Image (cartoon, rainbow, N blue to C red; front, side, top):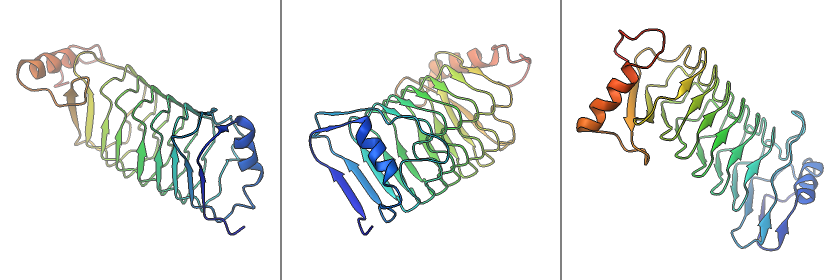
Length: 231
């Protein structure tokens, strides 16, 4: 009950080990730091779990998860004390994985390709999100992230309905300059009316010169129901 930090240094971390953490969540009620080091032979995906059975409690503040590929549904749901999540190898963030992690200010997902429904729902302390490899943003995935000001999605191909609904502070949206992603209904409903679409290259860098002009023309001509507007 007095354990505040747990670091896994070697061996293989299995689905059984993840379930052990969930089953002993109450006994680990003071756990604030959980680390899986890069020295492990392998790390199995975090299994899906029910919305009222996340793997950790509300004292958790920091996680660093080397070699993990998939964060299962509801894995960190309502871990309201969680401040940061470093997930350098994660490919998929499943349904409601960080739902209502209200203290989360930093998340690193450099290889993630998909962020599913409600993954960061009402993570109100997030201010910036950089997802350089994500191709799909699921429905209501960042719904109600009221502190979010900047999102960088240089590889995105699809943004689900209501994805950024109610992100009242969102003012900078970095999207690929080479193609226009599909955008679902109400994806940006309730966001700041004074927001900027910034076309970027594959590395997330702002376009300039002719490349910028071409990107603006591409977005302006996209069939969004109004081809006479600025974008």
